[in-house]
Length: 53
Ligand SMILES: [Zn+2]
Image (cartoon, rainbow, N blue to C red):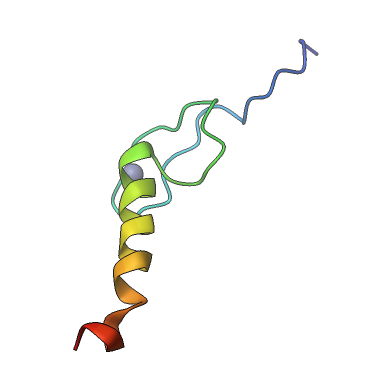
């Protein structure tokens, strides 16, 4: 085995539907950069829904 660096397995893909972006081995999340932001924003905007109306 090679040195144990802090990397994830290579060849992983973004978990967002229809997104086939390969994730960097340095990206330890399940989404690519773009979708990680989108998922975070979607969660934020859904939470205060009652207060907006
Ligand atoms: Zn993606």
